[in-house]
Length: 161
Image (tube, rainbow, N blue to C red; front, top):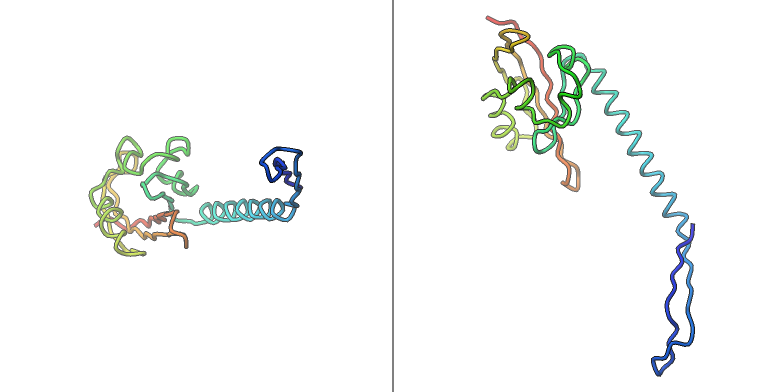
């Protein structure tokens, strides 16, 4: 791959008398970008594979609490479809059934101060499941350059008292 640059050739009197054509070999840069995209694709497939392998329901949120991904067990447990989940704020899921005050506290107040929160117990009555007592484990992931934030939220069901 080459990048061609064409510029006017000017005399000392600032009169154009021709053109200067330069070629820059960008093969290495192009190959590097192609490899980087391949690595990103492999990382995405690995992450999706991990999410779908986890037995407990797992949901991945972005910094604005929109669902980026969810595990197969999340969809099966809560009887929802990916098309009704991905891209929506967690609080809007299931006609607002995830708009739980304790969950809001975890995501908006506790987690921003801590990278990890384990064993956070939430009780809620889900229309399709009935009363549930859940232990939430949450982890905030911020990239090294700080431009991407994800929240992993794993759900473990406890016996209701």
